[in-house]
Length: 418
Image 1 (cartoon, rainbow, N blue to C red):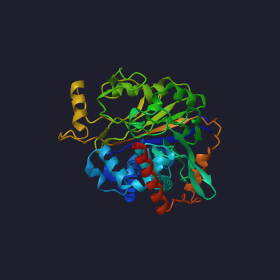
Image 2: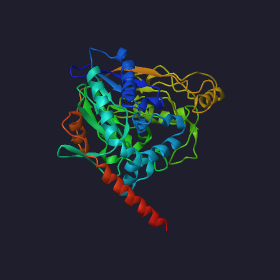
Image 3: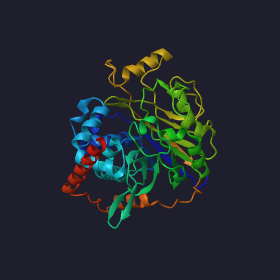
Image 4: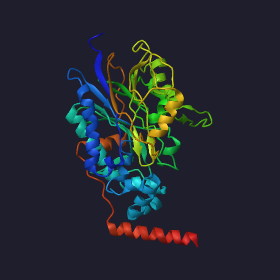
């Protein structure tokens, strides 16, 4: 290969999460560090390493500061109780920014949780000396106002942050296509904008991010292809038993096994794409209260790069998998589907929550990049300043002002009901 070629290693971490990992800042830092420790044996000192973490790994930070919340056993109960206990902050947000209670609950703690998430990831990228795809987390959009952050009212997107080995910001990507569970009746996130998707040239590939469902959508893949993406990153949190049936818009009636559907994401992008040569798809596992997360992490490439036939459970072997995490067992379809139910949240089965964790890696090579560095958005400029410690936290309204806003809001609701 030419002397300007890029040689690097990618590592995908498949962790298992528990609600207790998010009830305090210290617990969250331990959980994130444990993932980098899992990746450490697979980092190469002679070439750059890219570590890719999973989708929504900051979402449960909404539980932070409430160690009693996991005992409520369902996210619906926990969210209702958290909203009530944080009413002084959440209700004014609902009224002022016209959001639902779930989004207001997340926005109320977004300043502290954003800082905790970003600073934890920055410190890990520096300590381990890796390029880090931080996974993704619900995060507001910010702009800088003097020496503080200003949040765009009512906006909360599913965001991936990319960092270099010095902990500096490379770029941010929002998820464009939200699943039903991420929309108004669920986590209540704001969809990203397709025209804001960009490719970031780095020593570990020209990185394009397609968070979970985005990697299944032709408009996202085509936009990243057109900008010269060579390494696709697909952080994932599949919120269902891996061997259950899947049915999503635009045709929720067309159901199929989840692993069959997954072949339409990273594997298809690398085996049939123009510029996209490799893809990294880490998937989180574990039961969070009453929610089930399961899957098989994978690193994919061109068929000639990975000629050995293999594939997800419930699918036929095929080339294109450079690395693939085994599922918890092998067997006939009926057995696998039952096992998926046994593992799921609140199944009561002895195998409940006994998912497999894993770490995948692959050594990759690419020609020198020809992609231009995209200009930064105002949001990225603000996050970069935060990561460099050059910016203050935005000021929170004094408690008496928040209490006054709450009382006015309650009076308004009472009048509306008369």
